[in-house]
Image (cartoon, rainbow, N blue to C red; front, side):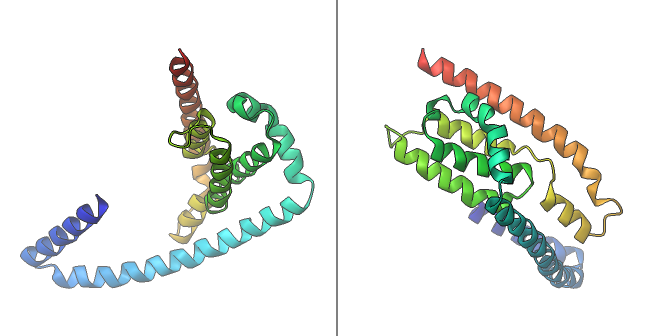
Length: 193
């Protein structure tokens, strides 16, 4: 669908620029945007490397184990089908920790690893298990204590207070997670009837 929408937007933009006499401004904005995109990628790369390095160091220490133990009751509540599978619980907790720290890029491979492990345990390979559905909902809501990516973007764009987004992010992600978890639990119960 996007391979249709984006070309339409580009054609409309160029047509409007030609008819309004702003073709030169369009050309200059294209080159400015590409330079801004490269600078943003460099800034994000530094942030991603920093937090991925911190996650690797934390993984070698007992911090991750302590955080996993803290998340264990929550994981058991959210994923009752996985009570006996410590490997998948650890993979889920690593993904949740990365999301909580705002490390979406580190959370993605961890989430894929957890989904792959859950698919191996899934009895019906053509349908998502309840645990897989819940995991998708939690990843989509992605509760974040430190929204590092958003802060890095705001900082790179010259925000006066890049961390001002923290409280609204807490509110939005917690509300999204609670709504998603509640709806998923309800639908899981309804599907069992």
